Length: 105
Image (cartoon, rainbow, N blue to C red; front, side, top):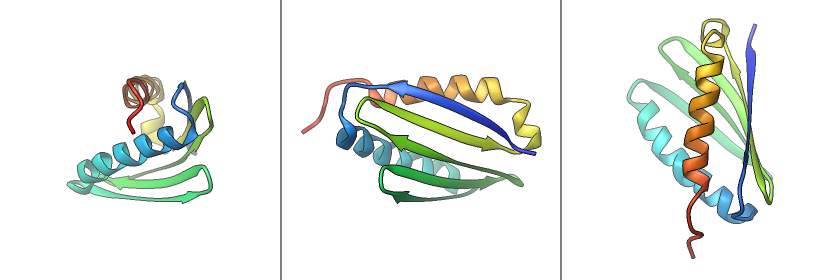
């Protein structure tokens, strides 16, 4: 059974800039995962649905972009569920780095 990890990251970027930064970060993640697995993603409005497979484990979830917050919900398979707190902390920290900083034009 999968264990959900939910992370809410507030931001002051507005929806369009937050989405742009997420797309930029996703490109880097896709390259990293591509070395050992695969990452598929698709936008449905302001929700990015994703599925990643690596070393026999499948992780799926969604990133919902709002004007002032990004919400990540990640479903972890059994063994990875044991690392949920560490994964939550890492996602929170990386998400803040991605969404902080000046707006780009």
